Image 1 (cartoon, rainbow, N blue to C red):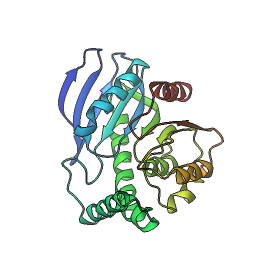
Image 2 (image 1 turned 30 degrees about the horizontal axis):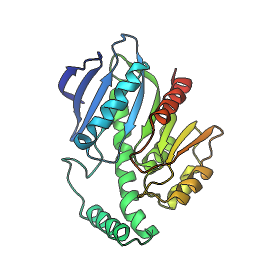
Image 3 (image 1 turned 180 degrees about the vertical axis):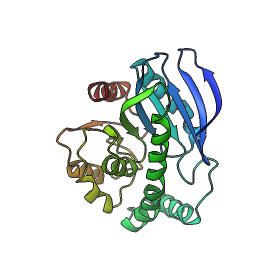
Image 4 (image 1 turned 135 degrees about the vertical axis):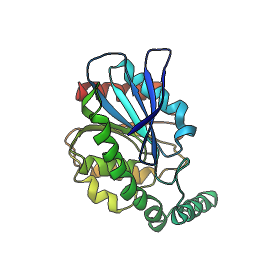
Length: 242
């Protein structure tokens, strides 16, 4: 991990951009000198495009005493593109624009290779982040592509709790993995999300094997998550990471 920039935000949060090999990322840490629990902030790709929302989430978490970090997804931002992934995205857009259902084959081609590449990168980032002074455990995962969060919850024992956003298509293969998830979950669902299969999201929630799992459903589209839903997610992390 190499830090490439550093600045102090007006609320005292320290923001540092870094690279992990060829992967760009951002780390935010609160002013407190004590080792802070860590929240991994997921997103759908495009680190710079997503920055306003990412930094808002990080500052909210810092106010609660948490460090936050994020990395760019494979094939997003300035990272090399995959021809197969670009074709899958084009097929997805074509189906949505035509008002057609998104079949399992498109979801598989789009999501499963992304999960296979992204999850080991998140684990490598976690290795590097937990070696830094001022960052301790436990660790939470928040948001992003729900299939990535599901896989991480299964394979990464250092993640103690997760807030998952039900806003992306889910391959059928992920339902079996969901049954293996045992950590506490808080799942956010926008009821009228135009780019999400609501029934599949409900079925995935039902499949999660966690004894503690909460579904927080709100009316509205993909970007209409109300502030109080974010507050509920923050209280969830306060219960499980402190």
